[in-house]
Image (cartoon, rainbow, N blue to C red; front, side, top):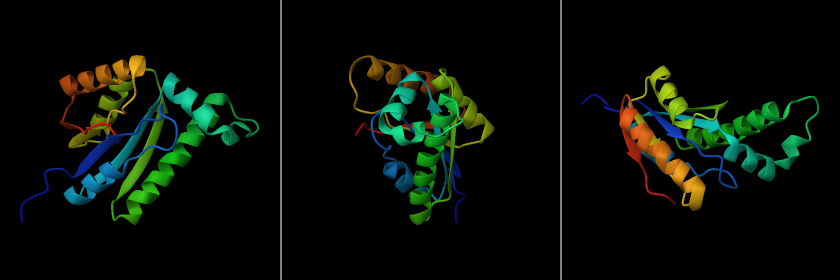
Length: 154
């Protein structure tokens, strides 16, 4: 039997859109490839705005800073996604950090986690946020230490 080409893949999880992110496409791909799935999110300003607006209950926690509360909320969302992957037979784990340097952090995480594939699915958003995501994808494509798959937007 041939050796698997993709043993570990990193899927960028975007929190800037309202609602829980849809990563079923990444879970299906990981299952088909027999790869471990790392769900990675960079909490930047657009993601913070979305998390604040969508998950107000987390903001009621006492004694936590705004950033700590948002990171904890992001980790809860990522855990739900990891659980969904596990229920589909995919070994997965989630990781979130706070940074304004989205492409750099994705590339750094790919190196640290020694992934064979980075997968990104730009959202169908418009305007300035669409431009930011396009530049993020372009930067990752030009500097990635491994293969990159850019899936079609929703």
